[in-house]
Structures are given as structure tokens and as C-alpha cells.
Image 1 (cartoon, rainbow, N blue to C red):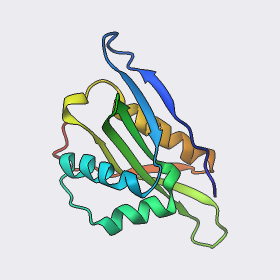
Image 2 (cartoon, rainbow, N blue to C red):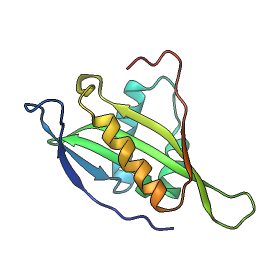
Image 3 (cartoon, rainbow, N blue to C red):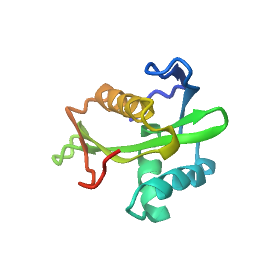
Amino acid sequence: MPLATATRTASTPSDAAAPTVTFVDYRGEEDIPLLMGLVDKDLSEPYSIFTYRYFLHNWPNLCVFAYIGDDPVGVVVCKIDEEPDGSGAATRGYIGMLAVDTSRRRHGIGSKLLLTAIGRMRDVGCASVGLEMEVSNVG
């Protein structure tokens, strides 16, 4: 099921002096080291290359990066679970990974990544979206 790809640019609304954030879709294998760098730095669960590829090969359009200039500062990686009856109907989205560089938090980057991903999942028929997080996650 193809999803539309897009690149968007947005300024953070909370701070007029904040840098411009550009949102870029996953382009292919060359983006995996960037993804791993962001996720490994800020998430406590270690993922193998196979986990990344599971998400990226099956749902490449549900991986979106946030850049400030040439620097990747955030990423969201998602998947879609289909009806167990084999009908192929998308019913539930799942946010597998969300990471924003600690020095770039509190500017709405994570929220914009989530809204982009959730919008794409809704566009293909997801009725709900799930996200797991650690109790110790305070920001």
C-alpha cells in the first residue's frame, strides 16, 4: 500500500528565534546509519539492524527525519498492523521509535514528527495508533 512522500519545512511556533526544521522522508539504506545514530543515542532499548530493516523495508513511508540545516535532529519510525482475517485492511498504527536530540527538545519537533506519522497512518485507514514508552521517560 503506497503512501505519499513529502518534504515539509516548518518553523517552531513556540520560539520565533528557533531554527527552521525540515522534515524529510526515509530515502533508503543510506539513511540507516543516521536513524541508528539518533535512536541509539536517546533510546534505552538497543535495536539490531534487523529491527530497523523490519520497519523500513515494510513501511518506508512511515519513517520521517527532522533536520536543522544538514543535521538530523529527530526521527519517527512506525508500522501498520492489518486485520488478522487476511483482508489487508489497515486497522492499527504503531509508533516503534521516536527520538529527538536532547539539545533540540521542547521546540515541538517530536510533536510534528508524530503528527506527520499519525496523519499518514490515518490516510491509509488506521483507526488507532499505539505507542509504548518507559515509565522513566520524562522528556
